[in-house]
Length: 208
Image 1 (tube, rainbow, N blue to C red):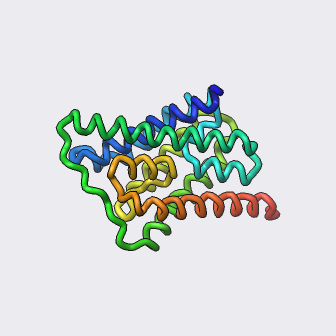
Image 2: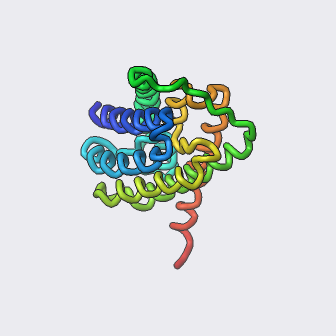
Image 3: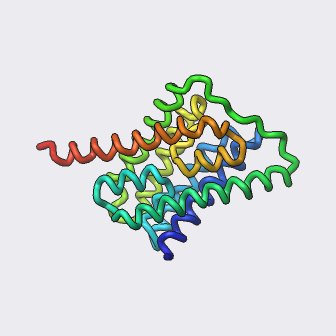
């Protein structure tokens, strides 16, 4: 049970940080840095209890590579998505407590662009996770945190930079993106994770 609670806690604080920073005009530009730094801290801490994925897409990639069993993968995803919804609800409430301006949902007018951007972001994160997350050291947190920040800075302006189904769900619930666009994010995320797992498998089988 503690491994699922660990996934819930990490996913909750990652989503909460993004909901609050993205909904505040004064901090929106710092959202990538906030997410990256938080992952650097949360991943080494979370490794005490779980694999510290905090992202259903990374859990999917790990499942495809045989790094997690199906039962754990299922409960990881349930915990991560539940954390996303809880963080959205609390984040939206706290935003209003701070006299925040009304959140204007982001409408994705170019569906293919959103899918491609989310695909690329998750592909990169899953590729990093599958190649550095074997020792549970702070190196994993630093690598994924840096990747998350860099990808959000580079691609976030195009899709919002969820790169995580739990975050996409959470930001949808919080009203930061239109709920009707959630499928675009999930499509890019799932295919990005699957592609990363496939590429890593091919690389491992390729002779030096």
